[in-house]
Figure (tube, rainbow, N blue to C red):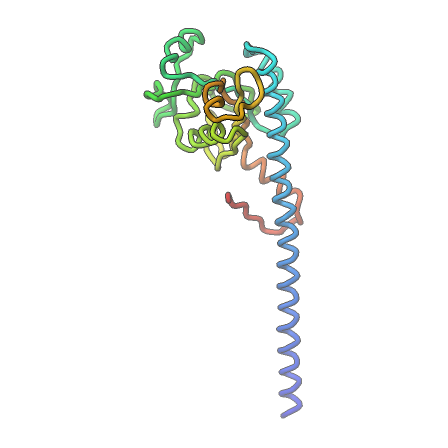
Length: 235
């Protein structure tokens, strides 16, 4: 009886040790793969940010960029960046709204439950002036990026910090797909002013890039061990 008990106890201890070892090894593997997945996402955002810098340079080089020029340049960027869409969002102060709409022949609008409507009163508007997209979307031209609180907070943060800002997940205009937006501020005269007041006064608009979440997840999943469950959390 004692011998049987000792054998049983030894088996239980060996099994417990084996399970602990397997769990520790699984944790180490998950940590490695998590770091790899995070690196893929970080690299994707870095490449997207560099692409937006290139688009911003287009506006630094020319005061007037027309739709055809932007589309041609934008589609070249899409082919190399992983972004699903790039756009130019012009800053329009409330006092300049009527003049802007007359110049462009396009009203500044915002999303509504039934489609779009004329944008409500705001101190400043950020309508989409140019867009190049690989998405199957309706027109996004004239839509005010400041109409939606998450987008508006990101725009304000980009101006306050003087650098590009990535939004939390949002629904992309036109397609309704889930995605991330990257806002790169562009200033009149080029460069980034050091003082907040100068950034505020010289802000011309934003180059914006859209990154579809499903595309980001595909590139992330392809980089890690097949069959390993993956969950990506914002924050």
